[in-house]
Image 1: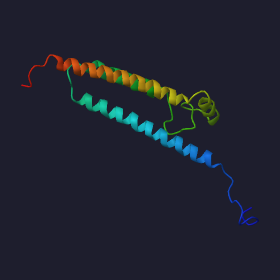
Image 2 (image 1 turned 60 degrees about the vertical axis):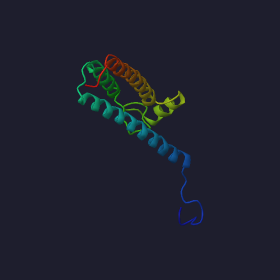
Image 3 (image 1 turned 90 degrees about the vertical axis):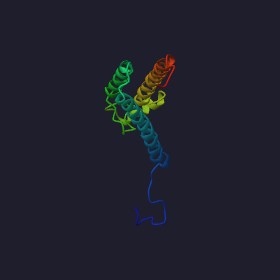
Image 4 (image 1 turned 90 degrees about the horizontal axis):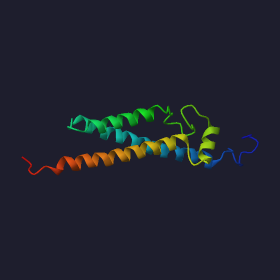
Length: 133
């Protein structure tokens, strides 16, 4: 085909399909960076061994276990779930997002609640403090 039409269109592919997939992959990488940043922050918090924070750390651990149990292939943007197909991903997108997106939103909501609880913990810890001695 290349010899028959050397000046014509050499390749027939959908730019939007190729670059759309790349854009979805880039967005997924940003989401993963957010997840790993959250993990790093809570691990740093745990390393300080603050009195009374154990329940918040347990809640975070349970949230992480729950998210991991979903079995998502984190780098596969075509997968609707842990072992899904492109057809499932398309169906998921038509329904307002993939299973991963919905699970990530649930994870984010739990983390937001946990961060509010953490703020309350910090506020109450400093409430009775009258001196820095």
